[in-house]
Length: 239
Image (cartoon, rainbow, N blue to C red; front, side, top):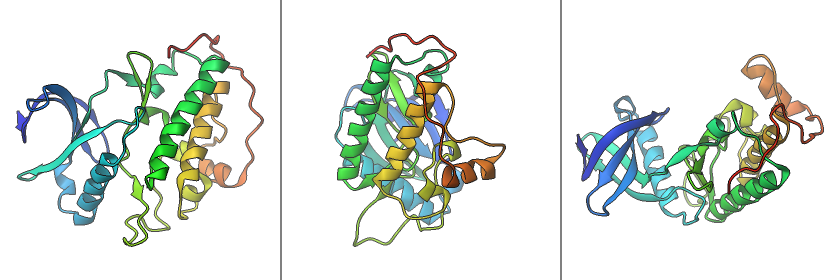
């Protein structure tokens, strides 16, 4: 199967926006991750605009720890983004079987914070920083991916994500997101803080039975002081 100039190799994932394929780019002679918008989304023009906005936003980013975007296009009724293909696994998968040493934890936090800062300086807020959106390459390097609900800070443009609309993954949301308030780069850093807490302790700082309990905890509670304890014996994380 071909999509545009790309030859699809296999499906590698599905998300709220669409399907992701591994594909070959004959022009660049490399493998890409091809993110294709779901057909049922095409009738929603606002959603299509958000999808294309994501691609343009990512295309502006140039950082070694952020997945690169090569192309965005339409092929008939198909709308897609061609992105850097990463050999490896998500942080969500890795952290289930391997703990961080304190040194690796500090290195990870600094690396991801620097990458987010680069995006924020370009006017882009990720809005959904979580372990499954951080990839670990086969050489141990980290890549932030899936700016699928990214918001571009442009004072001349109308808000595409209005205050009051909740976007993100509940367990890693900031208080502003939970309360449906406008967000900025600090929300991404809050989400990163939750990940660091979880990596350091083996538990999340905010919990509860159901989404409303989690929202209440995030918005109103102070998390317990963290300790570098985990049921898995810490060992060096490859860098």
